[in-house]
Image (cartoon, rainbow, N blue to C red; front, top):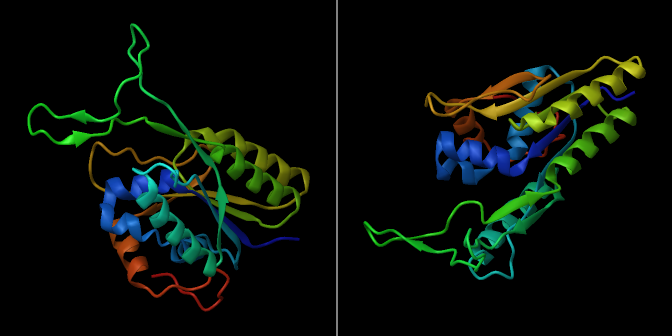
Length: 227
C-alpha cells in the first residue's frame, strides 16, 4: 500500500505565480526538485514517491518562440536528471482578428507613448494540462501509489479532481492528505488561494530563495532536508 507522496506541478500556473511574487530571476530558476522535497517534508510524508511537472512548451518552429522553447527544454531536461518528469501539454494559438470584419490583425502593437513593440496577451492558450495532471493524480490513487498528494497550483478547476481523489481513497479504506502549494507575497493585488478541498502550503520569498541556493538533489534522496 502506497504511503509516499506524489508531487504534481501545474507548470505555467506555478511559474507565473513565482514570477509575479518573486520576479523573473527567481521564477526562472524553477527549483522543482528542491521544492518537491521541501513540500513533502512540510506535510510529514515519509518519502517522495514521484514528482512530475505538466506544461506545454513554446513552439520551436515559431521564430519568436524558439529561444523560449530552448530555455524551457533545458530546464526540464535538467529536472528530469533529478527525478522530476515532464508530462507534456500543448499550446493552442489564436490569431487576433477585427471584431467587425474578421480581418487578421498584427500581433505586435507599438506603444504610442514610447514606441516600444508589444505582443498582446492571450496569443496562446495551454490545452490538456489540467486533464493530464488530474489523470496522474487519479491513476496514482487507484493504484495506491501514494497517501499524500501535493499539487503546486492555485487553479480552482482542480477542485473536482480533489474530490474524486478523496472518494478513491475512501473506497479503499485508506488515509489521505491533500495539499496545494503556491508562492505568496505581500502585494495586495496578488490573490493567494489553495485549490478547493486541499490544505495550503505557502511558499514565501525566504523559503523560495533558500531552495534556490541549495544544491540540486534527486527527489527520492532520503538525505534531503527542508530549508
